[in-house]
Length: 78
Image (cartoon, rainbow, N blue to C red; front, side, top):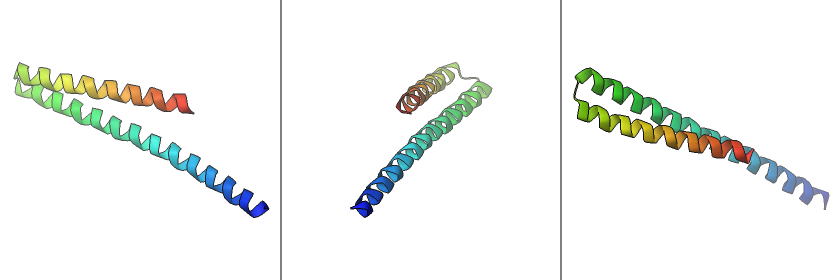
């Protein structure tokens, strides 16, 4: 019976650890997306086309909002 308890306990610990790591990787992916969108905005500003800058800025704002929501959700679960 103790063996089953140990296996169950280790399984739960492993599940908790992998879930935590998965959440961190999602936030890291979103932060990378924000960085890429920011670079796109800077590139469009250098080119000077205001309509393209607005589009890229909207995408950047959306990516930032997604990142904030994901970060907020990941901190609530801890």
